[in-house]
Amino acid sequence: MATNKRLRGVSVALPFYTYNNASPLTGKKASDSDHTHRWTIAVKGFDTDLSFCIKKVVFRLHDTYPNPARTIEQPPFEVHETGWGEFEVAIKIYFQPVANEKSVQVYHHLRLHPYQDDPSGGPWQKDKPVVSFCYDELVFNEPTEAFYQVLVDNRIVDTSGGLPSKKYTGKDVNVPPFSLQLEQEELAKLDQAQREINEQIIALRQRKEILDSEKARAS
Image 1: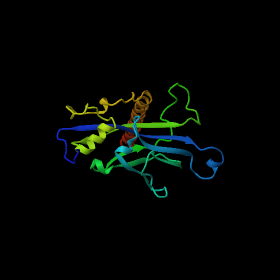
Image 2 (image 1 turned 135 degrees about the vertical axis):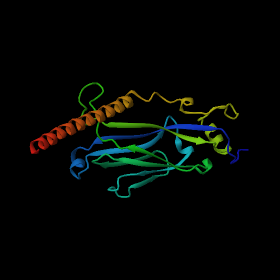
Image 3 (image 1 turned 45 degrees about the vertical axis):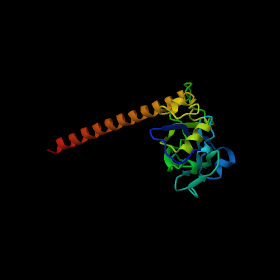
Image 4 (image 1 turned 180 degrees about the horizontal axis):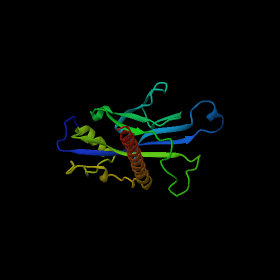
C-alpha cells in the first residue's frame, strides 16, 4: 500500500507549458471601451490532463483589472479577458493533497502584438491571432510513495511496476518538438534587444560628443 514515505533519490519532472493567444477586437466590441484585444492565458499539459496533480491555478493579472487574482479550480486552467496592454502574469500552481507538495509560481509575459513579421516573410495580418508559448517543468523531488503511484498511473513515468533507477525528465515523456515558431520568437526578441542597445550606445556617444564640444568652447 502506498504511503506518505518519501522516495529518496527519486526526481520526476512533469512537462507543461504556459500559453496565451490574443486577437484584435473588431466592430462594436472595439468601440465600447479602450480595450483593443481579446486574450486567453492558460496552463496546459502535453496531451495530459493536469488535474490529477493540480488542484487549482491562480492567475495574477494587472492591478487595473477587477478581481485581478483569478482562481481556476478545474480544467481547463485558463482565463479569458480583454485589454489593451501587455504585462507579466504571475501564475501560482497548487497541487492536489495527495502530492503533499508546496505551491509553485511561474510567470508568463502576456503578448498581444507580434515581435516580427509573419514567418512567411510578409507583414503580420491585422486579424491574425498572436500566440505565445513558454515550456516549463514541474519537478517533484523525492515524491511520496502515494504521489509517485499517481504519477505512474497517469503515465508520467513508466517503471514497469518497480521503483525508478534514474531521474526522469521531460525527455522521458512524449513531448512534441517545441517549436520553430518559439525559436524564431526568442531570436527576434534577442535581435530587438540588441538593436535597442546599439541605438542607446549611439545616442550616448552623440551626447558625449556634444558635451565635449560644449566644454571645449567654454574653456
